[in-house]
Amino acid sequence: MPKTEEDWLVIANDFEKKWNVPNCVGAMDGKHISVQAPIGSGSDYFNYKKFFSIVLFAVVDANYNFLYVNVGSQGRISDGGVFNQTSFKRLLDDCKLNLPTDCVLPGREMPIPYVFLADDAFPLTSNIMKPYAGTQEKGSKTRICNYRFSRGRRIAENVFGIMSNVFRFLRRQLLMQPETAELITLAAVYLHNFMRRNSSRYTYTPPGTFDVECPDTGEIKPGDWRNDHETRLEDFPRIARKSVIKAAQVRDEFREYFCSKQGEIAWQYHYC
Image (cartoon, rainbow, N blue to C red; front, side, top):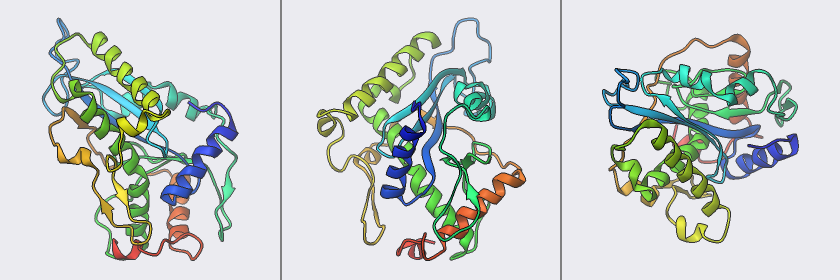
């Protein structure tokens, strides 16, 4: 995980350059990994999908690399409970991630913090942005904001898809104790980053592997990993949550920026 403000700024620059989301330093998501019923565990690992699992929580950058992972929480623990147990959340809450100083978006006046993109499984906070809940009116600012956030968060979905496509043990129930399943999952994470960061990335993730977006129209060509639907990675349940005032103000500021001359992208109105 990045240690300095300068390292986070490099990630933020990649998100703005590639996905048009300023002040973004990561996308976060969580998945359930199926395991056999652990000996003597009772219902500790039995999740809301009615199978036994451990949880993989991850934060990824704009280049499909893992920045942080936490593996091994019991499947019965809620998404909020899993997230609350991570050192990532503790560092975020204690302002010890060394994130860059709040700054004003182009054409705006309100300083906003650097944020991580998430879905409805996670809480909305000043540093965690997720789409507005419910169905939004077509063409509205909130719908456009949801599109822009989801566009940036799609990185995490692609990373998990590639992991499942290449490391095929993730496609089936792991017939081992949770501790062993945790170790081999972590090994897959390290291998993913290793292969993405050197010349083997062209073999590991050849062109067409990830979702590809046309830079002129925003049209998405689904990545090859989506052609195979067999997987045992399951999403966290999505839960409606109340927003705190500061977090809601930050999200509203993103909303206004995405619909301004400085922040809009030409095709966003075609998909919203």
